[in-house]
Image (tube, helix red, strand yellow):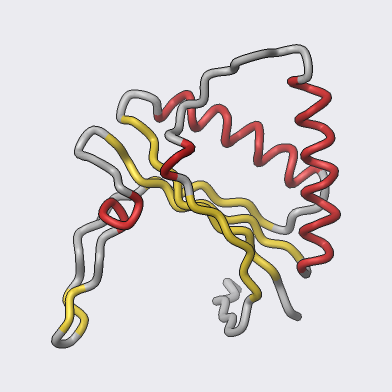
Length: 131
């Protein structure tokens, strides 16, 4: 079955991880309630550049513009298709607008200027089934 992924790279200042986790849990609950198949928020742990044959990979902190006082998070949400993603995201955005319409200037625990987002069509998939 084809799937579609929304992917995010986020920069979270050290010391704001709990605030971000709380926000992420709220997001998870909304996306899952409205039909997302899976939801992941992953804090970077081993982000050193890796040897790739004769070349060396770039690191997530380098790509994201993170400094030593910031953590890089990789997050993704799984959907059935791009159309399914669009339907779920519309419902989530409507819920978030209704929830926060009276709240102004809510401080974000992430540096939004360093966030990257994109929608991705799954081309190759593999999963191990536990028996």
